[in-house]
Length: 501
Image 1 (cartoon, rainbow, N blue to C red):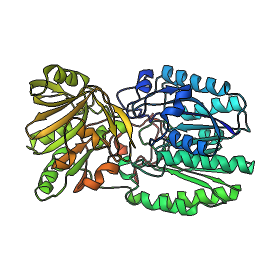
Image 2: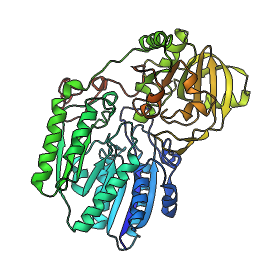
Image 3: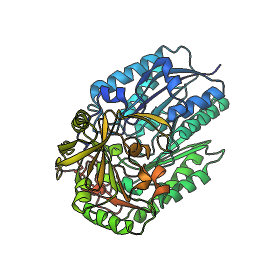
Image 4: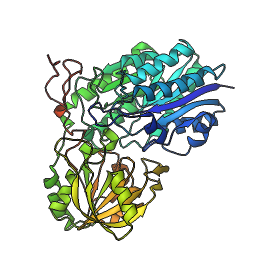
């Protein structure tokens, strides 16, 4: 029987964000399933939209014996603490060592992890695994579309296979693709040649959505290029908020021959480079966006949806800035809702006061973002929740959510989802769990950049992007870079990066 050790360790690191990823953050999971160790991994990782879950289901269908180590993830944030990284990796490595004879290893990683002590978290994980399993055993990895792929990652993995959708509705499918590629290696008895290319400009995440051009066309081309000669080909637009030299979009291919791999990688890299002008779009200020949404809502049959993109907890934001809430209130928006604002103290106060209470609160604004502050106002407590619910939409894919004590607060015509844990608002259930029906609202403000579109685009009259203060600037050139690769353009057609003196 084919024996495969499996594990997962996912974190997307915004090195400019205010809050680090601790051991406790991985234990809870945020928007990911809570940490699971050993045999229970195979019980938890099935029927959900996670790379490891897709691999487990496909591998079991092939009759492979799986030896699980650890599965964990945490909401995007600043650096993973050294303690958390070393503790998780030790469990993973110890599990592989104890697994007995193996035919391969599969890992579900993110690809953009930076720790307190390491620039390249995944490169270090893969190097340590390779040291244990030796040079010949296959090591296949699924990674996020936002991976900042490094030469060290490419060196130690026999295949890196990235998601192809943003919103990421294909995470489980990518795990299945990893199982398929691993089966090819095992059947062929030979690994594939590798090709790796990095692109010379950063791509803001708001313009990486695969519903739109130019990214949609790139992935269409990529799929058309795959063949028996090049069974696996990936494009990662990257996560443009990690201040280290390998922060960049990349293309990586695996071919029957080196020439096959090189030709496919060069074709996709050339296409991406030719489309540099097209990674752009309209971004509104908070007041511009709210006023435009109010005007559109006068005749709209469905909600107008605003992405509060710079406080996206899926990109390292603390999900607590108040710029968009202030704009809604200031412009007297009606039938409007915003979420999720992370404020455990406010949620606790709402639960203590009870439904119907009127509270004076200093809501949100506690992460120290320049230009932001708590919003001090009077709110009505409309509904309370323990924060437990299922998110059935295409992004979360049926995950059980644990948002902690939560509340719906109202100020005028604006309702606010307040929670005790952070997770990107990417599912309509994240309004409904506190009694807000999203389809009945005129305006919805979501703390998300793109993932929300998987569940909300079908109910939206229009989608707008606003830039209120937050940890993830919509314009990557606005970040205070110090350690990028010299010469890389800090945005499409932007200025080349020069190392500060």
